[in-house]
Amino acid sequence: MTEGFLNLCFKLRLRRAPAVSNPGLLSGLVPVASRLMPILFAVCLFAFVMTVSHQKESRVAIAHANDDDRDSRYIAPFVPTPEEVVVRMLELAEITPGDTLYDLGSGDGRIVIAAAKRYGIKAVGFEINPALVEESRGTIKQEGLANLVEIREQDIRSVDLSPASVVTMYLYPNANLRLRRAIRTQLKPGSRVVSLQFAMGDWTPAKTEQLKDSAGLTRTIYLWRIAATRGR
Image 1: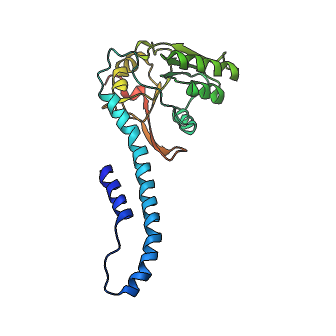
Image 2: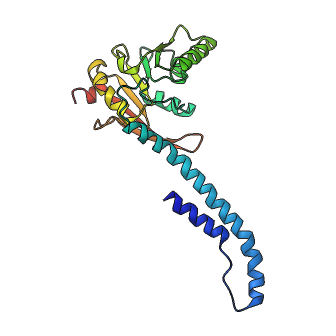
Image 3: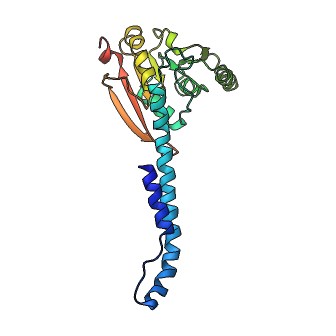
């Protein structure tokens, strides 16, 4: 589909003006066409680039989701979450002062840092990449949040979720599915789970919300409450 669209754009750019019986009419049309064709080509090329940028993330996600990475050290790669999306994820969780937030695959620590700064709660990030662990710990120290925020270098598949009342994640479909058992059995009723971009199989979310980030990409946020999904 994308290839066909690009071919159409190049045809618009390179197509010759049709032959006409009136030379005077042709002399008037050619300058207009010569001015319009580059504009049409530029519009087509811009639309193509935007289409590719939107599709790229989906293709990468599907590729990782279909990988049989049960023995892989990394369950999902680090993809930064835009700040405005982080804020909305935390808002949907309806955080209260007594909450403890666990971020599974915490990357550079932006979600746990935002949770501590905005709500004053304890937040723990779990990240297996040593470089990201070091980076996020450095940021936490600079922000003066060491009393609230902790980063643990740990595979998220081995995390005990029971101390958490809010769990956030931006993983891939297979990763979400592998975590369902721990989420269902370890989290207390009333706990909230917020996932960016990917659902949890046949679990029905309490809320689904879409928003456009600063780059113009549409993001989907899912919220589950453990009281609604427990036992499924």
